[in-house]
Length: 353
Image 1 (cartoon, rainbow, N blue to C red):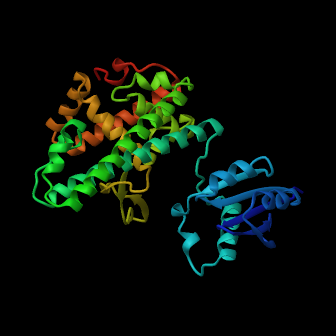
Image 2: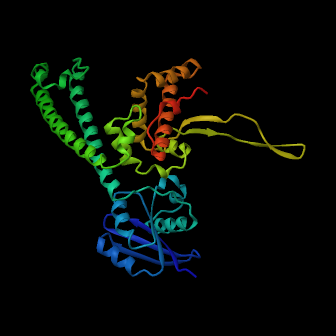
């Protein structure tokens, strides 16, 4: 009989609670250790049997996943939002760790994909670039808010151009407001330089992947979007079909039905009624959704994709929903091309039928 153990971990900044249950679901041990690398290594080296470890997604998950993977049979990083049982009932570190171990034993946890070391590096570079873009955008909005708060029209990017800054600063009558605008402009210049550096490193790392040139040939997918797809998705084989890929992108249509079956003459049959739609799924990767929505707008410059879009609009689809349909189709095409490792062929996407 295999000595299988399910290990649930509730990780915190200083102390981690570890609960071990056996194959029959019996509690074997409850341990508290310091959240240090040497403590984790000593504990799992001394744990007999085939250990299957589970912990929640968080700040320590990537570090622990990489460190524990060689020491145990499997490591699962779970997303707690997918399982409401984790938040049900009383809550404590010991109970959270035990619930994780029991749900792992039952196979009721949804794992978070971590990828290999190369993708982890690419993902860190993508996060660095994405954070700098967000920070630069936030600073630009703060600068414009200074002028809008004084009734000064500042649409466009003329305000941010170095050669026009003195004229714009002169429009601020208060010395304190001018000082604040000057410091924000200096901060913006620093962020823009760092953003360019991060973009260069991101693209340099992405070009090492053989799939990079393949993604570049897709409509609406440029260098940054191709690198972002490599960092976020990693391996397209994670998704069997587009039906699994759409929810990850936020393009899955949520439907609700009730009283699906009725009794007619002693026979139970399913009613032929249309399910009510409730929009798109909310639990998704927001950056991936933004990538395909932006790529869809760029792809509409192509005549074939533009004809597909206007065909939907002429059929009665609202323009905003038609753009979502274009993004959904582009996501499906991207997955198919990526999985098959073949170049994008527009004739295969838009057949006469």
